[in-house]
Length: 176
Image 1: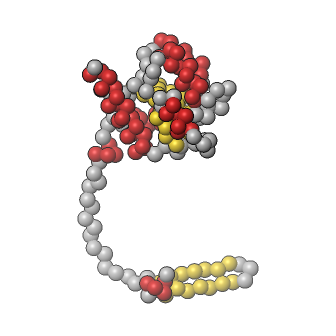
Image 2: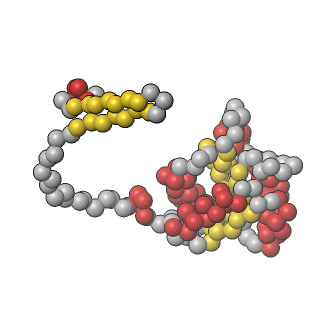
Image 3: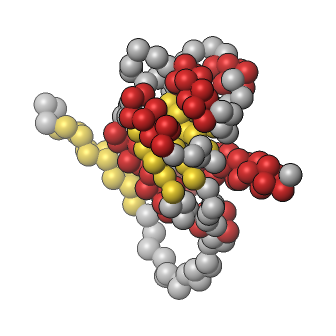
């Protein structure tokens, strides 16, 4: 690479001690850079007006997800680590606009089984199954249960798009 660029590459080696590599680059006058503002519509546009329930057995995942949702100005976020606390919450609160549920919950049931149980209380609730599981056909299983699917690690842009889709479903449902 150095040769292609016309730069001098030096190597010095000391047996039993190590090696040192250096490259000589020409010094050039710097120009003042003109900084252009980044378009913030895709990054900062809020996804307001949604209520979201998140279920994951990993505290760090829930914390990161909660912070991300708050940055998007979603203020009505409830997070749960286990089935019992979620079901207790569901009995006394209306269904959220979106349910984000991890597939591998580390409990006696998986996210799809928990979704089936929560539907007994809330009815059909829009949701997204998230998973890092290599299980084949998991996205299809989620779809068969009426859920969207996102692979972990969740890409914020994909989550935002999914939540915006659920927000449009909410609007369409309230317009009827």
